[in-house]
Length: 172
Image 1 (cartoon, one colour):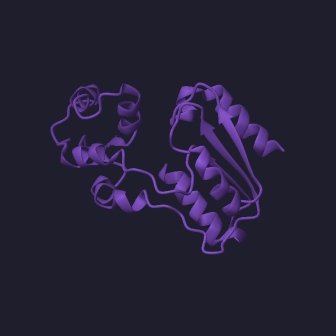
Image 2: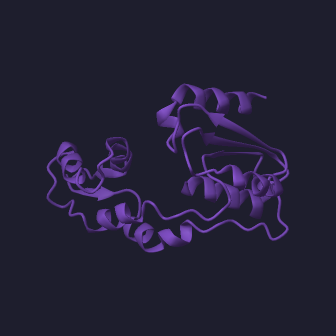
Image 3: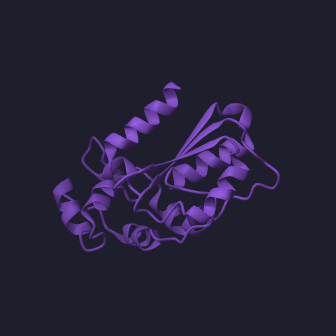
């Protein structure tokens, strides 16, 4: 989500630096801060006493009941050579500024005229049909493809279709 918002903003602010744009299940509209509770919980989660990753997964199960999301979050948990754990992502900053990160992107007359691919999960509510006109206004050459049987986690829910669409776009 944040990557899609960031990529759209970069393409609009510096179109000369972006050849093509791929956005996975995100549109320019403001989105609800669904992940703010998770970030706040992670910010308060004590990782200093963890012995191993399995212990972290077990401890986070109460905070993040969905195992796929939990495993995704745990990709940011890293171990230093001396054995201590740290979050690769700046969890305190993300928790503090998450509302701002969910803000909508306003064109203000800006457009990105390069080729763009917007991928939408068939079962996701992140890129709504009502946002398509705004996508086309900001990204006039946008192609919009639906990934079947996928929610917001396109690359996890239907990896084959996701990769096929991305490769097809990049190779054309």
